[in-house]
Image (tube, rainbow, N blue to C red; front, side, top):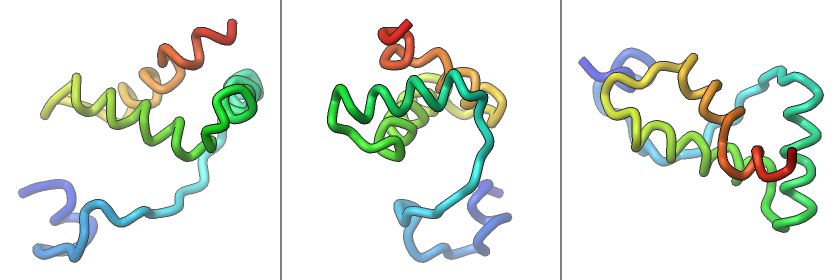
Length: 82
């Protein structure tokens, strides 16, 4: 059984549909994401999606939510702003 089956039933309509979530981040990460927004003219959402896509692609089937958050915070783009 896939994770999407548990959350959305056996036949979800579109796994690429965007869902809005609310998260809390340390201020330092918010500042980095906002800086990316200004410097790269890329929305915070797009930066987060790119980082998560990269993480889940590299981590494969053993990916965890905790690992995704850690990867986001270590993402190459965020580290360039240190």
